[in-house]
Image 1 (spheres, helix red, strand yellow):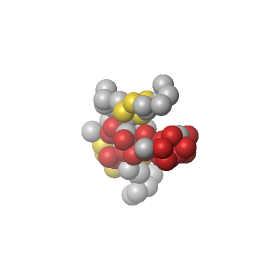
Image 2 (tube, helix red, strand yellow; image 1 turned 45 degrees about the vertical axis):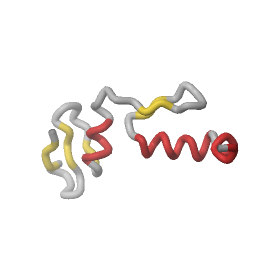
Image 3 (cartoon, rainbow, N blue to C red; image 1 turned 90 degrees about the horizontal axis):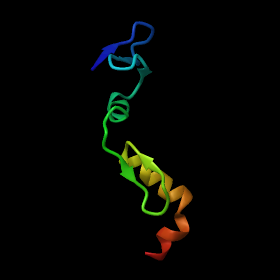
Image 4 (cartoon, rainbow, N blue to C red; image 1 turned 180 degrees about the horizontal axis):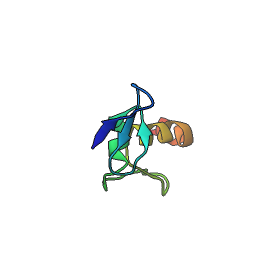
Length: 66
């Protein structure tokens, strides 16, 4: 799914979309259909760690109640 980018040894080019990325694992999840849903608002995320960040930033007061 990835090939080494010619411009930098630290970057990878996605064969699916052509984007150059430094973290293949994170980018791979942007191409999957699975979504993590926020239980408090309509936001959805392709990665669970991004959802966790969203919850801490946007819904901290709600998290403290549980």
